[in-house]
Every structure is written in C-alpha cells, then in structure tokens.
Image 1 (cartoon, rainbow, N blue to C red):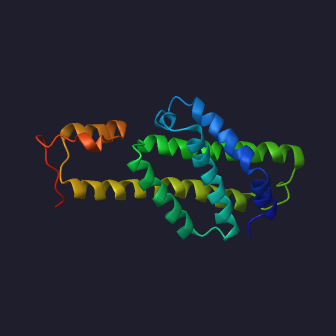
Image 2 (spheres, helix red, strand yellow; image 1 turned 135 degrees about the horizontal axis):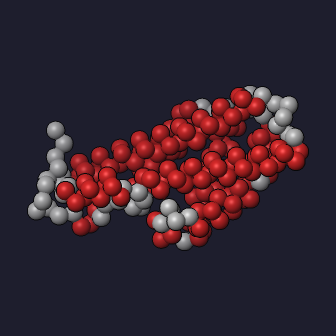
Image 3 (cartoon, rainbow, N blue to C red; image 1 turned 45 degrees about the vertical axis):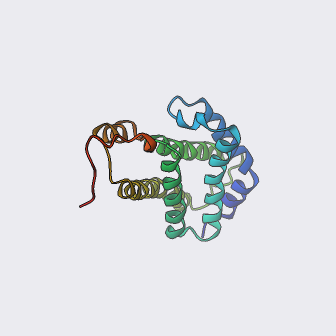
Length: 182
C-alpha cells in the first residue's frame, strides 16, 4: 500500500506543487509552445498532472488509469500544436518539481524515512515514466488518425514533424508527396 503520508503531502500541497511547476514552465526556454497559452491554461496543465497522480495513488496505482490519462494528454497536445519534445519536458519538469518538493519536506520532517522508500519511489517513477510512454502513444495515435484523415503529407511536413515535432495542419502542401497508409 502507498504511504498515506505521501498522499497527504500531495493533497495538502497541491497548489504549491502546481505553482512551482508553473513558475518553472513559464521560465523555460524549451517549453516555447506553452508560452502561447494563458497563465491559467498552463497552471491548470501542471496542476492536472498532480491531481491525476493523487487520484491514481488513491485508486491503488493501476497502470490502466495512467494509460487512459496520458494517452488523452498526448492526443490533446498534438491537436494543440505541441512538439512531443516539449510535452516530455513538461512531464520531466513535473517529476523534478515533485521529487524536489518531497525531498525538501522529508529532509525537514523525516516523514518518509521509516516508510518503504524503495516501493514508494518505484510506484511514483512508474507514474511519470509510464506517463511519457502513454503520452507518446496517444500523440502518435492521434497523428496517425490525422494523417489517415488528410491523406496528404509533404516532405516539409515530415521534416517539421521529425525535427521540430510540429505540423501546420491547415497549410499542408498537396502538390508534394501524398501520404497514404498501406
């Protein structure tokens, strides 16, 4: 069973975790697409990751729930025009903020020293690492759907997707390569 102190720590400090993530995200030179959205939208993106972590832990840390949530995040971010690299970095930042927060609290209170630390770390790493896997899966499933719907994809579009991870879906050049699933 997951340490109840950990769940309480997240519950009692959800706003602070979210604010710390947001502050890091808006300063990030890597997360440039996030800069195109409002502060509230970005704050809520960070908060949603921690809210889902809390929900996931309370429900028993089931893999299926991580899959559903992060698949959806990947698909939504593709449709919003986010490069996959930025999405991964945002989740990395969530994990970094979380561990920094827990580590700092533990150094002061010793809350987790007597718990099964290895088990807790493994479960939490599963959340973030599986999150990256399922974000990628959701992102590419949505991309495949879009490609199948559009039936067209230029060399430049492929280059943008692979190198910059962003495609201007409204401006695909139909006179170049036509992409068709086999």
